Amino acid sequence: MIKYTRSIEPFIKKRLFEPGKIIVLYGPRQTGKTTLSKKLLRDYQSERGYFNCEEILPRDILMSHDPKLMANFFEGHKVIVLDEAQSVPDIGKALKILIDAYPGMNIIATGSSSFELANKLNEPLTGRHYEFFLPPISFEEISGTLDNAEILSTVGVRMIYGCYPEILSSANNDDARMKLETLASSYLYRDVLQMNHIKNPETLSKILRALAHQVGGGVSYNEIAKAVQIDRKTVMSYVDLLEQAFIIFRLSPLTKNPRDEIKRQSKIYFYDNGIINALTQNFAGVETGRNVGGLWENLMISERRKMKLAHGAYRNVYYWRTHTGQEVDLIEEYDGKYHPYEFKWQKTQPAKGAAAFERNYDDAEAISVINRYNFLDFVTARGLE
Picture 1 (cartoon, rainbow, N blue to C red):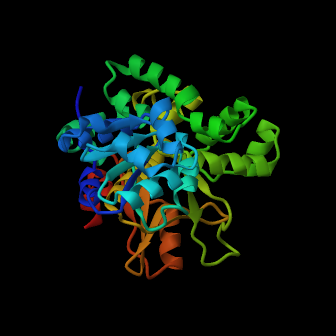
Picture 2: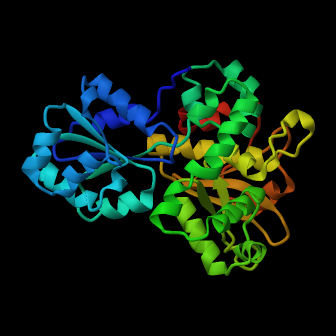
Picture 3: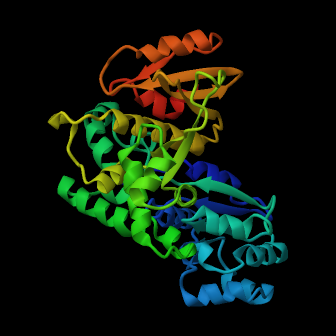
């Protein structure tokens, strides 16, 4: 099995030994949080410092809020990992007590649901923790192992099957498909179902499938509500939960002229393309003639997001669309300028929307077209230079 170096690893190590600070590692299930945490423990000769908070003993020790009891249990390790920390009620309070009493203790807390762990940490640990996000493996991380030619030759496969660690290690495409279907049907949104006591999992599945079918296009909550036969507010609340569980993320429209430009309809993307295809039950490859425009757009926007999050490159991001259908796929705002991008699987010129955007935003940079041949700079740190 190929082992990939995760981009955030050096950034975690840089912050890990600051007295009185805790490292919090978020990310979807099955993206390698436990693997990375155990690697960090090995690097610091602290292999025995791993504790799964879904197990009774470490959970009960933390729930005691007794600093001496906690110290006696967790002492003797240079670094400790509290995996699935959201499983502990009042985990934020427990960690504050522990770090106040023993500021030299180096703690990594992991969680697969931001809404559950963050709500328990933010108030007790305000200013006392650093947050890191671990998505599925990125092209930047793959580029540390494979050369550019290998990546370019397999990008079509990754567009269909995605980049979850277990998928990358699959023996073949049939194996990858089976694993993806299991992931998409159970593991991925377990936190949404458990932590929010959703009584109808099938409704959640229907909403996810509807979002997967609309990827790359504007999402109409009213249309989804009508198709699923629930009200619009319920759809919006489910989308919020899916975003906080790191399954999807939203892109808002850029508006300068509200009369001509769409100003309210968000676009929704998935962190991993394989999940889209598992939800839609369509694993047809590009060689079949399948229309891959939306999949390519999702892949590039999600990979760009992964890379920027890993490097702390926070920028305002939008898409642009007019009521007449002119559109630019992605716009980043930084250094006082708009930087627009379009995503085309093949080598093509910018669409007609590019000229319209440039007329409306004459202070923006020229539109860059990202295709299957030139995308590597866009999704790696080179694209931040």
